[in-house]
Amino acid sequence: MSRRYLMVGAGFSGAVIGRILAEAGHDVTVIDSRPHVAGNCHTARDPETGVMVHVYGPHIFHTDDAEVWDFVNAHARFMPYRNRVKTIAKGQVFSLPVNLHTINQFFGTTMGPAEARAFIESKADSSITDPQNFEEQALRFLGRELYEAFFKGYTQKQWGRDPRELPAAILKRLPVRFNYDDNYFSHRLQGIPAEGYTALVEAILDHPRIRLELNRAFDRSQRSDFDHVFYSGPLDGWFDYDLGRLGYRTLDFETFRYQGDYQGCAVMNYGEASVPWTRITEHKHFAPWESHAGSVLYREVSRACEAGDTPYYPIRLVDEQRLLQDYVRRAEAETGVTFVGRLGTYRYLDMDVTIREALDTGRMAVRLAAEGGRMPSFARAVL
Image (tube, rainbow, N blue to C red; front, top):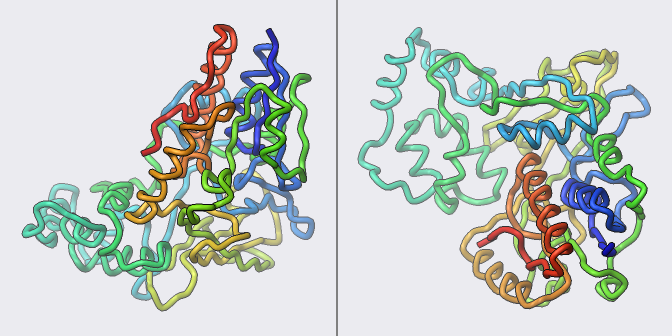
């Protein structure tokens, strides 16, 4: 029997779950309070230069999940792209992640892999046997010089906290390579859709059983019109923030244009705390298959997210974890709604993980609908 589903949010979570349900013969309504689909992955052509701009900051698709890769490629033409990040420190430009070139350039050496590995180990603080925070993790595996040049100031700006207050796990996502590989990501499958992410999400939503309504805010009273709601808005927002707001970092973008090539790369980090922005992104370099005389750039500044801001990075430190537990307990008592995506589960999710979870959640919904079962509040554990 056909059911009626509401997707709150037209990002990847809502679009993919909606597509799975529509293909199974269910009726799907997708709403979004913004005037566009794709959420924070939204892309649009700059009218002055023709550059495809990543409106809420750059997104590079990278995954080892072949099914997810096949799914997005079925709805858009992907172009190969390798993210090669540069950083300015001590008056020089270096490559990130820290690799053999970075190490040799920084220390003025010509070491090979084995020699460099031993050298960095000699710089590391071996007295730290069980790193308890970001700084201890960096000092244990990188040493003070590389930590202070590339990570300390950048981390302070990105998270608005002393690195000693941040968990060690954050640094584990930044590898050190003892070869000359400067590809920021290590996943096998990497690329960017040729016509941008908005066109990709529009294609996913292009199904006769999917109805899309933009500029439409969600009200919980609307849930009675549907058999089930998939909610990708803020988890605390579902409860009108009545226990307090979960902490996020947001980004401010200072947009400027340049005639020509401003910095010669897509991403230039600024690791020193004295520079207010964390990085400058030059958007035409995210589409090297195109040619544009003009350029559009963002200076990015990270700050605490306030009411009305666009949330980007969940903080998930001690206070937020306690508040999250309270909201999750309340959410688990709700019926007729499943919380999905980055905001709905208060987790930082890459695009491929978001799509993987959406595929799995959509298929679970199809199966439970056929069996007469009920969807849980969370398809994945979030605590």
